[in-house]
Image (cartoon, rainbow, N blue to C red; front, side, top):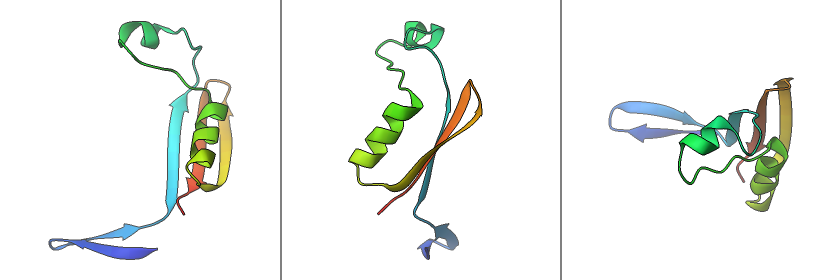
Length: 74
């Protein structure tokens, strides 16, 4: 963790990364409305973070329809 200076405003930088999603079917109203949109499951998103060498990746489910995927950026 460190401080990065942009002009006069310091920003605290961490290695934490989070994706917050609404869990939907792959063929949902959103994928039909947004051309080219792909819906991913929380497990697929976690696998993508793992493939990108994120560490300590976890899936947290609030309700069946919401999830947060956490990871540490190496």
